[in-house]
Amino acid sequence: MREANTKDIFLLILLAIIWGSSFFNIKIASYSYEPITLALVRVFFAIIPLLILCNLKKIKIEAFTKEWKIYALIGFCNITVPFILIAIGTSQINSYLAAILMSSTPLSGTVLAHFFTKDEKINLFKIIGVLVGFSGVVFLFFDKMIINESNFIFAIITVIGSTFYSIGGILTLKIKNKGNENVTTSTTAWSLIFLIPLSLLLEDPFLIKPTPSSTISLIYLGVVATGFAWLIRFKILTTNGLVFQTQVAYLIPIFGILFGFFVMDETITWRVLASLLIIITGIYLVKKNSKIKKNAR
Image (cartoon, rainbow, N blue to C red; front, side, top):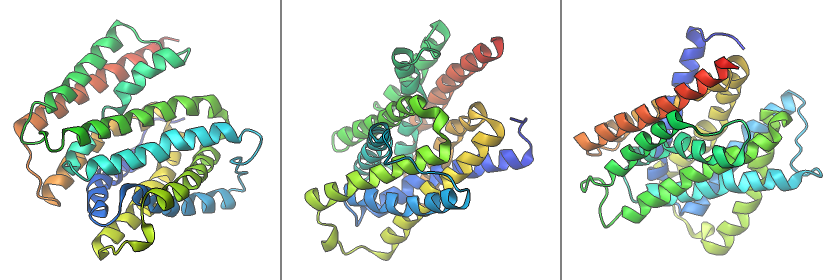
């Protein structure tokens, strides 16, 4: 691993822009596509560049080997469930609100890691960071202009979706030596297997008459915000390591707010900005403690 240079910082910012832009595109896609079908098409377009990458690098995809159960479980928890829940939630709340709520993932991940890993135990400093971060999320729910009786449950659904990302991340640690490209492609393949029957049984994908804008947004979500973004993530991880890559969590909600305001004309209140600042502070405290602990070893 090397210290980040200008190119590395550019890639990190580009990744944050792409992931930050995914939320308003999810909202536009939800105008025409039901949530499970939205997730299905997104995953379908995402797996194409991943398969190409594995083929070019001659990486063996282990999705259907004797260890298929863990890949299937991660695909369900880390892709299938959160993609569906986030699509449901974002359809009824502001796109930038979804980005902010999703930024709580490192906080829930810290709590889960304490119970399900050996090396990421929580301590007083982390507890403070988690409490500060989640207080920012709670503060958002007092802004009746943004979260009210009509969309409260959808905000909760979005938070649950972000929590499943943390669950998936914990499970991924069990096969961290299997290679990022293989794990991502294998779990994406299993997610596709889950989503196809769910879409056919619970929705009517063949009766959809989508608008061009919804289809363009959905293709963007698959090819760029999922497939291409994961390739950038691989590059950052292999070049600069996990600690540098996780800094993207600070930037995603910021770009999510900018896209929501300028593209979707969504209202931003002072409580939204205050909540974002509190959440980012909480994430910083948690990650700062983790970095200090790592350097002390």
